[in-house]
Every structure is written in C-alpha cells, then in structure tokens.
Length: 483
Ligand code: AMP
Ligand code: MG
Image (tube, rainbow, N blue to C red; front, side, top):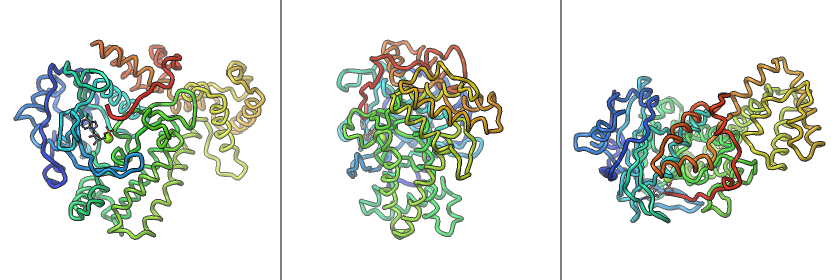
C-alpha cells in the first residue's frame, strides 16, 4: 500500500495541521471490507485496535500529517469566506492498484480553526445517514464519496438534544470543493489560487495539461461531470438538499450529505431540507443550481479565461445534462434511442412523468412496476392504480405501439429495465428506523440495510421489507442542515 500526504505537504499555506481527538468509548462499528480491499489498504486495518492506532496514536500513519482544509462557499446564494473543515480532517492519500489517488478523511474528528465555535463533532444519526447515502448512490451508479468505516461512541454530543457522537472514515478522489477555488480568488490570494490549480493539474487532471488551454479544459471537465451527476440525481429522484458551493466536488461526485432524500411520491418541487423554506435546493431546482454553482466557480478562472471563453464552456452544461438525462430516462422506460423526427420517445417519458406527478405516485415503485408492463396485454392491475384512466389509456397506447416496434424481445426489455430501475432505495423512513435501533445499540438492521443497498436492482425476497412505500409517519420527515 502506498500512502502519500501531498495535499498536506505541498499546499501548506492552504491547510492547517490538526490532530484528531478520539471519542470516549469508541467502537469500530461498521467496516466496508470490499472498499478496504479495492483500495488495497492493509488487512490489519480492518481490525479495531490497529485502525485506532493508525488514526489516533502518535506513530499512526493516518495521524502523521492530518490537516484541516480552508475553503469558503456560497451558502444559499450568499458568499461565506468563513468555512473550512470545521469537523473533518484530511488524513492521507492512498494510491490504489490502478494508480488512482484517494483521499482518506475523518469526519467528526474534533474542533479545528474553522469550527467557528462549534464542537467539531458529528452525531451518530448523521454519520449513519452519510454512510448509507454514499453506498446507496455508488451502487445505483451515481458518483459519490464512499464510506470506509463508521466509528460509534458513548460520548454525548449536544444538538437540540443529547445524542451519541460518531465518526465517519470516508474516501473520494479528493476533497477539493468549488469553495476552495472561490475562497482563494475572492480573498485575493492569487499565489495560493495558482498553487491549487497546479496541484489539481498535477494530481487529478493531468490530461487537461495536453489541451491548448488547460484551464479551459479543466472548467470543461468539471462542467461536464457536474452536469452528468445532476442528470443522474434527477433520473433516480435524489434531492441533495444543500447544494452550497462548499458542498460541490470538483470531481462531479455527490459529496457532503446532509438533509438529502430520495423522493417517495413524485413531487417535482419537493424540498427535503427543512431549513430551506424557499426551496432554493428543491428537487426540480437542482439542474439550474448546478449551473449557478459553476458560474461561481468560473469566477476563479477569470485570470486564465476571458468572459467569452467562460460563457462557451458553461454554455455546454445544459446539453450535457439533458443528453445524460434523456439516455437514463429512455433506459428506465425501456426505450431505444430513436433520433428520427417522428420518434415518440420524448412524449412517452414526459407523459409518464406527468401521470406520476399529477397522481403523486411513488417514484421508485412506479418505475419498478413499469418494468412489468406488457406491450401486448391489458395491464389491468397496473392501470387500476391510476385515477385518471383515460389519460393512462392514451399514454399506454402510445407506449405499447412504440415498444412493439422495437426489435428487442419483451423479456429482454423487462430484464434491462430492472437494471435501470432499483427495487431498493434509501428512503428517509428506512434510514430513520435503522437509526432508532442503532441509537439503542443495535446495529443489525443497519448492516442488513447496507447489504440491500449494495444490491439495489436485484429481485431478492429478503429485500422486500426495504422496498415498501413509507407509512404515514415516514413521509416528509423533517431534516435540517449540519448535525
Ligand atoms: P455542512 O453543512 O456540514 O456542509 O457544514 C458547513 C460548514 O460548517 C463547514 O465549514 C463545516 O465544517 C462546519 N460545521 C458543520 N458542523 C460543524 C460542527 N459540529 N463543528 C464544527 N464545524 C461544523
Ligand atoms: Mg459541507
């Protein structure tokens, strides 16, 4: 295994060395064995004692160069220069067998100079939520930071009430956010901004250096990756909830989970974040907010790109997002790409989404049921679920005719659709049930749920209990920002 500390050692002016502080009575509660192996981390780190030595003792390799990163961010549209790792530390970078670099980061590691008076801790509830979400999104095929391990503890942390503290060991290509670039730009620290650019080219975007203008290539890459990411969120009904620019990764991955939700009923303007009454980050605002955030990031490129160049690059965002989204939606509906002018594909996808929205149908369950649609049959049971039968019949007629014209067999289409429409998703009410048990010291349901989320498309009986719609108490659970 190869560990490096390039961020800490090469960007000293952009970070502050801080040591993590262990929580009282900590337990290595969950380990992501597969991910440990993929990164080729030492086997003995999967054992509590050895991992804690690495993380918390003087001789620990994950303790040697831990740093808090400085960044800023546009929060709900307002610039805030006061941000940074307030409760997370970058520990090291591991180089995997494919020579890919992965940051190792500990969230909830104690106060840092950027904690702004807060405790630097994370509660068990939010740590479980982040663990679940990272793994759920990854296994659906949506880029995300990953969870390596969850450390529970008996140390109380005070929020609205006393809660158990916990830590999350997480990994992703890097923890560089839009807000890193914005901070060094807006504070006029041009040398540090340049160091950050150089570091990104050297370690993460080496291909861009071959372009005529590497800065343009870099902005293009981030724009494309962000557009594709948000297209995926839209196709799977994921609402991030806090798309502040400090929570936007330059790698186009989902990052910094807070009050997120997967949609239950399809309400396009759904707001998962209780602290966002205006709905700035509602489900259907995500595509436009992605572009707003890229505009903020692009400011930091103005020493290298003129306004016209920036406009050209950001002008690619909408089509990149729509391209990805259309492909995903066609797959979800079992439709093959048809570029002919008389294709009905767009009408079918939009018609289906319109029925789901008007009738407030469960997004995931409806798509999974659509996999069983019989192009030659009556689909009686399916049809009976809809109130406006005429509307359904008209849509189903167009859908059937189109499906029958495709050369793929019905069986193959249905099987392919099941690989694009998950049976199990991370619903907030399920997360809540798991958390309630974990807070009572029982982590077995959490482990079971993680297993199901690692295999979301499978038709397994034992996952039935994780594929039910929410009971009344479990709809629209109120979840706020940091915890
Ligand atoms: P978040 O809402 O988790 O993205 O956090 C926004 C900012 O607040 C970041 O700079 C965090 O590091 C900081 N922050 C959030 N919670 C805490 C905490 N409990 N202690 C210190 N800083 C925190
Ligand atoms: Mg954050």
